[in-house]
Image (cartoon, rainbow, N blue to C red; front, side, top):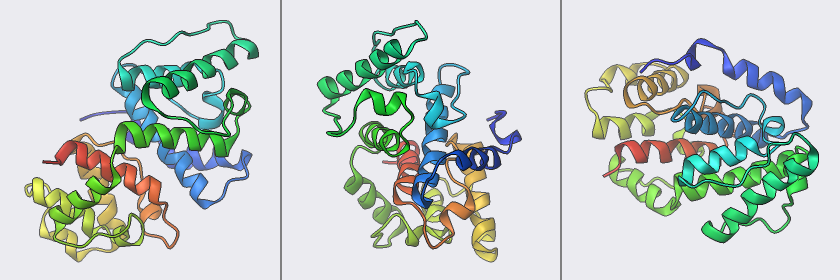
Length: 235
């Protein structure tokens, strides 16, 4: 599988854009992960992409495109580039998600997305990712336990050294994961796993090794990645 994605240092680019926002560690991680997840969805149908999550969703067009990709349905779209029409685009998305998929955030208004509110934009995207990618956290936990014969209890510290990810891939594709991964450090193991998953399984590289091998890893980001593994490898 070839793509220009790995030939550009998106991790460095994404971190540079974060200086414009007062984000905590988990918000920064989610911003990067959710951006990459959206771009993976876009890559299935067109060449569009998100560069700055909180800016590029403001006019509602890419948000509409994302929902159309995920649902296969067409949404009404205002094409005039004015705030009034940006707000209407976002309202169309929020109403569609509420009516058809029971996705609603009580405190979220269209103005929050159009104004680039980081916290509420991340909350909306997490609701979308959970509904369309994860669907059932407990089902994924049980799959991880069956795939590894380990009592997986979290999506943070347990994944830190990459062994769980390696065990899952080895269970379904033993030809891809060799014993050599046991003899290297955690970050190199994670690097190799992410490359294998991308090149051989077509799973977008949502994470970097330092996102997982750290004391403050983000549960939502790791769960999203594992959910993509489940979609590709699950029984």
